[in-house]
Length: 268
Image 1 (tube, helix red, strand yellow):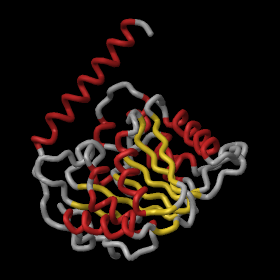
Image 2 (cartoon, rainbow, N blue to C red):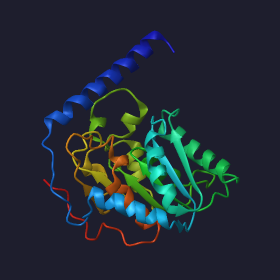
Image 3 (cartoon, helix red, strand yellow):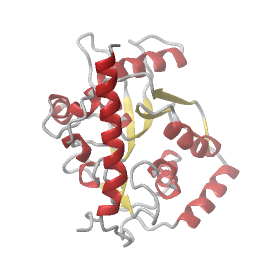
């Protein structure tokens, strides 16, 4: 790679880092609880202990995927919570080495085929838990390509995924993912228009300056949110939040979730 390209990428990374550091201090945080998602951190931790005493057999394999550029930090954190409370095949896939959504889609399909010892034409039906951009990769992979190959998803659980684009995508930093996550990009429009034959369950935390909680679910899809504890990042620490992950675990185990319908609207 030439020096000027390296310089542009470094400048973009520094600029994005500065935005991430400055914006949280410019926002007024919300602390009100969600009336349709009432669970405390202590209650969530206690429930994880209960579930770990009697793991439940999975209905189908489960894939946990990280966001693009994440060296499996988010996926590993979720796996550590989910694996002790279920009995069945659970795999993790990351896209640290991928710079585009298309590359990430192809890796997801290849890795799934390899880990399930099959080929791309015979992938099993799976459930998926995805953090951030990983949710868009999963939605993209569920769309058949020209050869009809796709990831057959039964349920997709997303945490802080930019389903409708991302706030920070409005800042031109010169990366393919950023360009694809503008609300009017061809990628977002294609994902939005694609038919979904799987259940999509969306979670987020408030005051997410990276994605924007208003973008964390497609229009008309329920969004279950929780307030971000003081001193934490709304986006980058969401995968550690036991309130979100315990609700997903309950749903995977076939138990009644803490979140209820109708989903409360986002606070103003």
